[in-house]
Image 1: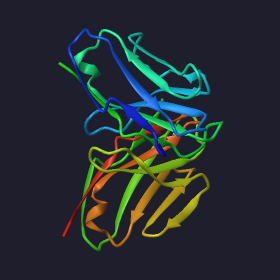
Image 2: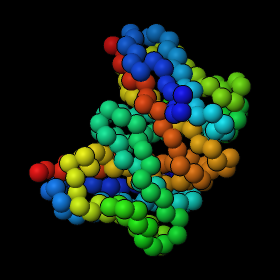
Image 3: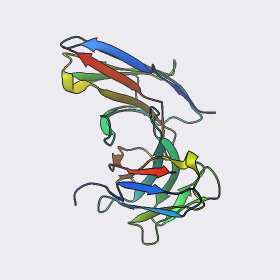
Length: 115
Length: 108
């Protein structure tokens, strides 16, 4: 497709379960970002990939969160032992610019609800 | 630390002009972005300022003063479809840091 694709669009899970959220960026975009957005708040930075490597993972809240991008395209955000506080919309964005500055193209997000 | 402040909510009337302010204090600065986000949708790019001054794009304009750590987004000839959240974001050298967003409601 032409835009950033995220799956699933909605995920409901129980406390303590494992969750994977997938992001398929725009073809050719080297930079990929994960953000988390709670209701009424702005997106909160989680992690940023340049190619296959995580260039900055300073926003990951704790070691239950992990993200990979093994082939420099699709990325997966993994959350272990989910907690109710993890409930949010997880947004993925990509950018064609190799170094920092540039417009981000966002996906529609994956809404995670932890019961 | 990183701090980006903008008003939580604003209201305006169709056809009017509204200015949304944003102040920032960040460890790095490579430019400032404004994004629009309709409820339940992805943020979409509106404007980018890296130099001081005003950037105009149709009904929307954005201003930046780096020395004051201040920006505003100006929306003219408001339409009902402009009801959305407006996110101020600072490029902190390798990632965007977002403010909490300003929810704008436009009334007829």
